[in-house]
Image 1 (cartoon, helix red, strand yellow):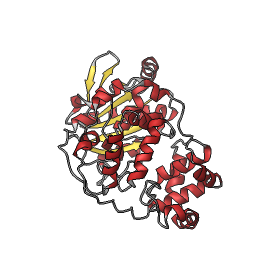
Image 2 (cartoon, helix red, strand yellow):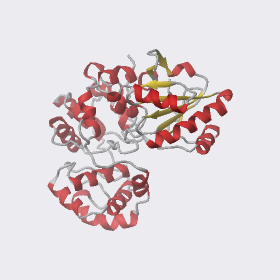
Image 3 (spheres, rainbow, N blue to C red):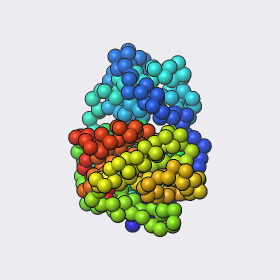
Image 4 (cartoon, helix red, strand yellow):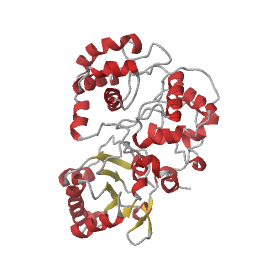
Length: 376
């Protein structure tokens, strides 16, 4: 079974249709604020946090998370969630209430630049949970942990947290809080849907695994599934015919996720059409993935006369699909550049100008995000 089709067809729609779990929207302005955080100012602000989180963000109690080395975007969003009540903790809510958005960005900048905590380093048999981490469980509609949290538990942009080296007790209490709903600031309720299907033993073993995991190496390795199991794409087109990304194997693919109600998408789509017309004869293939009502999508395609294939994702399943392809915020437009041999060379959240996209096609980043990850 292919995860990209099997799981999205089974994921409960209710979880995706729930009210927003956070008030943070990852706009260009918000991302710029976090990326421009001042770590020196954050260091001064962090002095008030040291009694629980240590001077550099390594928690002084197993019940406290390690902030050192955590993703800045994740840290920023948690502080914002505490401030607006999306996440509850009396102490943290009280502290966050007095912070400005700039304060939060500065704190996030400081902690994210600190050396991560050393893993617990305790011996253990982790084979029992590696199946969940590596493969997930299709019978329970559980995706592999590594899909969102990274191959080494290092976390993924935008704000999927790093788990490697977190205290086991903290990880256990977090999973239980998701399971009983007392923590509910997970976007689209995904962690709640996952955690409520985990047994106490699985929670304990997962927490132990990640507590003992360094971000650059695994505790132990289970046999890996072929990459087609995690990133292959198979969806229907407007004619109801199944289409697979492997149809365009051997071409450089510009895979673009969009929706009819996204203004940035509507600006970007004609430019993608121009890319297809200009470079189609040179081995470039643009493939669109529409994420909302098929009729609305068809109207857009007709009005813009888009010269490339459009695949359709059921609206209630779109957020999961975006996350599978590396967009943890489920924001659109979202573009993935795939090399002819199937390697993912580049991923970008937000609108790309035609000139920038043409440059990326011609000269993808030498150290792209996903050079080792195959798309089919």
